Length: 285
Image (cartoon, rainbow, N blue to C red; front, side):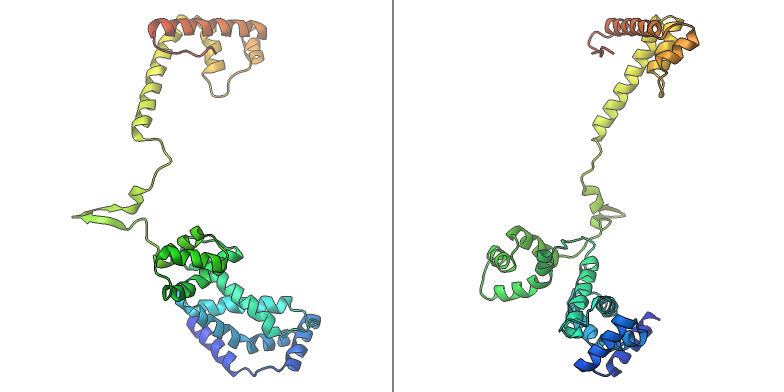
């Protein structure tokens, strides 16, 4: 269905009459001043030849020509929306920039799943490097010399040229693609990506230490009396952590008294843990 619509658009563009400067100016004024939709249609369909011709220049990037034409049509409409008939410039000259820019943005977005730079220098490098590399290869031998000359001509760094060369010379590879296959088992490239997670041995070590410390703390809590145990559990061992004032109201004592009992209980816990496990470092609070 989409291909049929594209073919109709191309046929209509080829049948559309060429516009001379006077007719082009008239249509541009009607659209700009009166928003005449018929004028917009006439001026855009007459310049679809320009869109189709420019799309053919980007065919080597392996993207569907139909998609390039659609993107160029968007650029053409953008040019019509921004064009000022009062300026002494032909609409075709003005529209060519917008059509090319729209197609270039489409190529940069879709040529590779790996996004590249979008600055003017990076765009110039992307779209000009292959042609320039072919020219330099006839007179220059090594890749490093080509990179240096291309960088100087295009006004970018040698590192940018080398990176672009690698991107244009290679192709996207799925991380799920196997590196090698052995029988029914295969090793995917994903398996060789570095992980942000801690190594498994450290994770297991921390887990074992945490479980061991939990057991030691549970044993040490046995040295506390009922009120001390309640204060420590509600102040230190619960997620929310009760306030001194709330515990004072609950126990019928002042919040200063709660603080004193808490400090005494913490000291008893530190002593119990140090006596039971001499090598253990216990924080002050």
